[in-house]
Image 1 (spheres, rainbow, N blue to C red):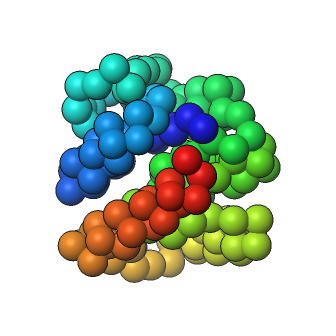
Image 2 (cartoon, helix red, strand yellow):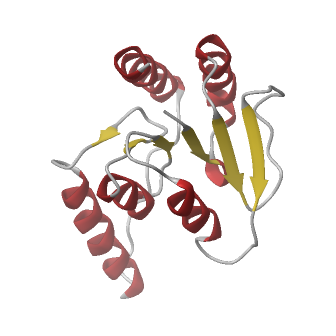
Image 3 (spheres, rainbow, N blue to C red):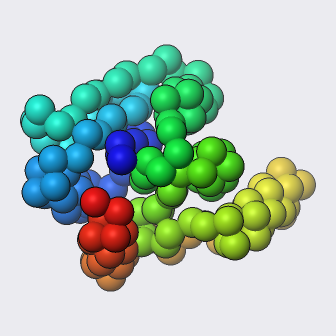
Amino acid sequence: MTLYLDGDAFPNPLKTILFRAIERLAIQTFVVSNKRINIGESKNITYIIVGSGPDEADHRIVEMLKEGDLVITADIPLADRAITKKAYAINHRGELYTTVNIKNRLAMRNLMQEIRDSGAPTRGSAPFNQKDAHEFANQLNKFLTKKT
C-alpha cells in the first residue's frame, strides 16, 4: 500500500500524527501539493510539487493511484475518484470514505456548491479542532492496523 497526501490544505496539527505513522510502519508516501509543505524528512516520503492550476494535485494523485492505496484528503471529488479506482480515502476529520457514503457526500457537496453559486449565504465547515485531530489519529491507526 502506498499513501498519498493531498497536501495543500492539510492541517498542521495532523503533520506529526501522520509522520509518526509513516515512520513506524515504513509506508511509502507521496505528498502532492501546489507549494512546498513539510510533514518531516524521511526516506519513506517523496514530495511532489505540481502546477498551480485547479485540481493539479488531484490529477497527479489519481494518475499514480493503484487499487488498495490510501489517499488522505478533504477534497470529496478526489475521494470519489480514489474510491472509483478501488483505493481508500480518509479526510482530515477522520472520516473513512467508502462506496456506501461517498456518493451521498459528493451529492451534498455539489448541492451546497450550487447554493453558494446562486448567491445564497451558507455556513462553512466548523473550524478544525483537537477532537478532529483525535478522530483522524484513531481512524488512521485503525485503517493501518487492518491494511499493513
